[in-house]
Length: 285
Image (cartoon, rainbow, N blue to C red):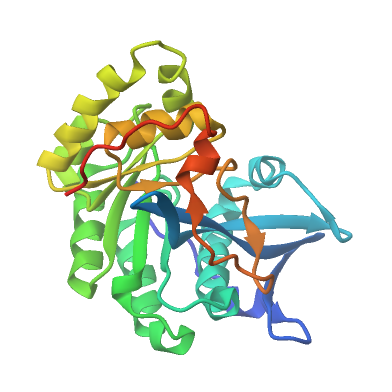
């Protein structure tokens, strides 16, 4: 854990709004824009968008830059500043999605915000201003990213967010530190299955047979299961047969910038799986 918190920089001074009210951040030569990727829930033979994950689209001289390129180039001294900016942008642009009632997933990296007092202050500041963003705490899900972290810091932060009504998700389950031990520690409301891990699992002929018990185990622990990285019909089929609650991936919908038209129409599961490859779904609870 860090010893002394760094001097707080005013993120608000780096956030601006364009002529139609879309907020963006400025960091050096980059402009940072909010994009939202839909998250779907199975309902009968359809998938309906029920949530979004806030993501950042960095641009340099109006040209998009790969997020990994941008984030990998941020010096350690600026990472907390950028994470805070991204979170405020996603909250501030939520009203520009144009659809009411969608749950908003946002990321929290425990290795960036690792000083307990500073991290708690960030959370309290965020929740105090949710009314300004027309957001209720019950619409927020904080994703704890796959990182090593001090257990005391994590449990304290999770307790604080739950007290405010924010739900907790563990990201990238199946890799690194997102393990069953972390589930036991944090008792998340949602577990996000890592897309790369899931893609490898789907390469096996008996993928459903291996995946279904994992989903059942997570359900028994009181967590909903979200599979990310759905990139083709086989991924969707295995996820649905496994009984997951939520789905996310490019095969279903790509991230869209705030202010663009959000597609509310449900997706046909039969069409996504293909007319010759439709499988019965298990009865959902």
